[in-house]
Image 1 (tube, rainbow, N blue to C red):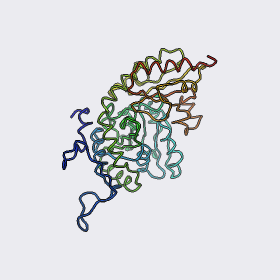
Image 2: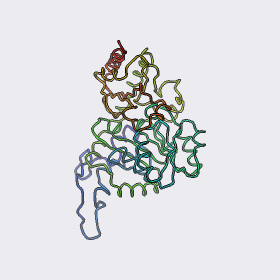
Image 3: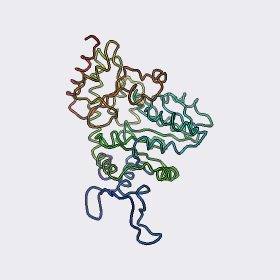
Length: 383
């Protein structure tokens, strides 16, 4: 099946017993065992639940991996993946990845002597130089959050395979509709499914897909042992959200391109970060490894304009954390999503105070552009 059909009919399609077109919500913690030592494949819902299983099979098929796992948040998913490593291991990370990923490495796993190296993963030579005997994985986002840097997944995967280490890709921005890292050589794919996969800002969730049986066994053990599983109801909500992923992403992409072009021509805007510009760094790589440029834009508002006033003047676009919902969202990375990253690191990579991130929704694009235009005009200092 093509992905548009797989989104609707993949995984466990409906309920064979009743004919219900939607998988039921198996809202149960435990299961009756017919006799001692015998069960029907389900014992306890932390270990296995049919609604969650349907979601996990679906996302595995969408990412074309070996097995999928659903967690209670994107950070729970990332934490489970990082739990594959042991004391003394080092992980190479992209230099402007999501602040929560940096925070859990810096403030939690650091206590267990799992280290990290911050590298510009868009530069494959830098990545090669960063790898020593302690490095066990390369963890990338592409496009990165929030500066939209593009990393060559196939190039990173080749480097990793040569050194017998893992490639981990956070695919939240692209989703499997636009980008399939496992087909490009990645070993593990992570999603904050709270974002585009859920798509309606109503469910906090995370997903992981792995490319082989060994990783699947290890990650299932971690998922079951640590218990950060997604609930049956939220699993149902993600399956529901995935059914419209294709049509939503098409509209996100269409709207985002128009907003990006509008911003690029505004006198109030110093720079626009958007991987769909032909002159943007990484454009050719993005064109090769993905089927679109996504729904995210970041831009720097010029000196003489107040970014706080910009946020306060928005009427349609919501000022808030997160991304990927049907509604447009505006975020201030330096004080919100990336506040946990030290100031000097933020400044060095370009996450400056006057950087604004937009998640473009599926509203009427003319309304969005008018809203941004008015906010920009009214953000002028002493204006």
